[in-house]
Structures are given as structure tokens and as C-alpha cells.
Image (cartoon, each protein chain N blue to C red):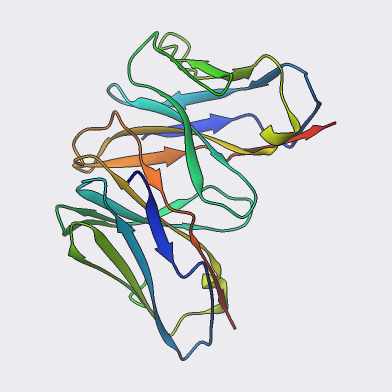
Amino acid sequence: GNSVTQMEGPVTLSEEAFLTINCTYTATGYPSLFWYVQYPGEGLQLLLKATKADDKGSNKGFEATYRKETTSFHLEKGSVQVSDSAVYFCALSGLIQGAQKLVFGQGTRLTINP
Amino acid sequence: DTEVTQTPKHLVMGMTNKKSLKCEQHMGHRAMYWYKQKAKKPPELMFVYSYEKLSINESVPSRFSPECPNSSLLNLHLHALQPEDSALYLCASSQPYRDSRYGYTFGSGTRLTVV
């Protein structure tokens, strides 16, 4: 079945450091891939998405490229800020049991220190 | 309007109470979802409504009863809950359910505590 594996956290970085959060997936067919972010006490916000192989999603300085050959969708940011501290979820969306379902990874907690 | 609005934001209820969670969206989405999220875990799908009809029930106990009165509203009726049902309940909506390209828009959730 469809599944998503994220690197385990927590991840702690200093401000302006380079960020990579690894995400790999297993899926049948051609899923769409997403990164969601959850700030403390809030719901999930869509950060970026990619709908086909080699697509690059980007938003707020974050980027991720849909790599079909390595089944990966790693999240990167060149210079993190304290305000980026949150939990990040990689997810895939595809037709399962005749309906769209979003399958999440376990989440990676990111803490950025000033 | 690109939001999903959930009420209440916080709810404390006893195990014998009956309460309801409400969710509203005005984005023209025709699929709506309930998710349950425990602390430090990803959201878990509970129910999917597509065109106001229940299309997926992920083997959720009957003490949770969903309702979709129209294309903009989604309710979750709660009765005789257990303390382990305490969690963040998230509502989401999306484009027609057969189109997987757009992801979901999530509400900010209702934090439920069962005492």
C-alpha cells in the first residue's frame, strides 16, 4: 500500500543554517506529493506540492523536487529562521478505495535556535 | 474565502455528554474530511464525504457520528466518549475526490478533552 517515511526528529539547527528533511514514499500509480507544516497549537498548512515527476514545489524559501527514480521528496531551505520552528509532515495523495486519501509521514519536529 | 473554519476551538466534555464539532468551508470544495491527531503523531483519517455522501469510514467507533448537511458544512457528533478520545480533531476539504493534485485545506482544529 501507499506509505511515507520521514527522517526522525527532532531536528535542531541554528538560525541561517541549511535545512534538509528527508522524505521517501511507496505508492502505486502516480501520487501527488505535499509538505504540510503545523505550528504549535494550530492545524496543518500546505507548504508546497508537486504533482508529477521532476516538478519542483516552492514556497517561503522552502523547496522540494519530486524524484520518481529515488521515490523521494526531500524538503530544503537555504537559511532557516526561528519562525520556521514547527512540525513538518510529508504526505502523498492518491486514489485509494475509490476516493482521494492523504497519507502522512510521521512528522519531523524542527527547532531553530537564535 | 480560502479557509476552513472549525468550532469550537476547545471542548471539554464528560463521558456521558453529547456534543458536536462543526466545520464550514466556502471554497466550493465537494469533498470534506475528519481527521484525529494525537500528540506528536500525524493526523489519522476518520471519515470522508464526497458530494455530501459518506464514502469512507475508517472503522471509527459508533460513538463518533459524522453528518454533512450540505456542501459547505460538516459536523461530528460525539456521544459517550472515552478519555482516550482526547485529541485534536481536524476538518479538511478538497477539490472533487477523484482529483488528487491539489491536496487538502485544513482547519485549525478542535482540541477535545474527555474527562
